[in-house]
Amino acid sequence: MLSNKNAMATIAVKDMPAARAFYEGTLGFKPGGMASARVVSYRSGQSTMVVYLSDFAGTNKATSATWAVGAELEAIVERLQAAGVAFEHYDMPGAKREGDIHVFGDFRGAWFKDPSGNILHINNA
Image 1 (cartoon, helix red, strand yellow):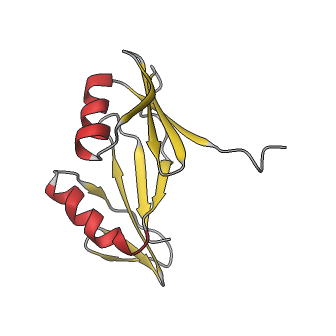
Image 2 (spheres, helix red, strand yellow):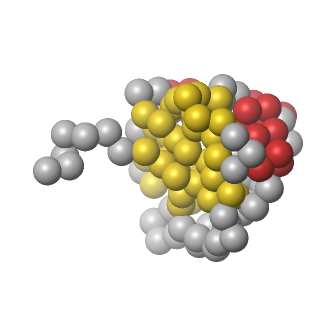
C-alpha cells in the first residue's frame, strides 16, 4: 500500500526563525514549495522534509532524520564543526568513537541537534 510511495521527514521546532537559520544557513537547505510563519518545506535529495512549529518540539529522544552521505561523511562533519555544530556522543554497544564519529565496523555515523533539540544523523551508508 505505501511501500512504493515517498516518505517525508516532519520535524517539529520551537522557534521558526532559529530553525530556518539552522536548516538554511548551517545545513544549506533552500525553502521548497511551502513556506510560512509556521511551516517550511525543504527538498533533500529526492525527498521532502517539513519543519513546523509545535508545542511538542524537541521532546523526541530518538533520531528525527537521517542522511546517508556516503564517503563524504568526514568532510561534512568537518564543515558542520566549522559552522559551530556540536556533535552528540552516545555510549552504544559495539561502537567506538573517532572524534565525533561513532564507528560500528564499516558503518560510521554522527549525531547532532537542531536548535529545538531534535536529533539529526548523518552516516556513511
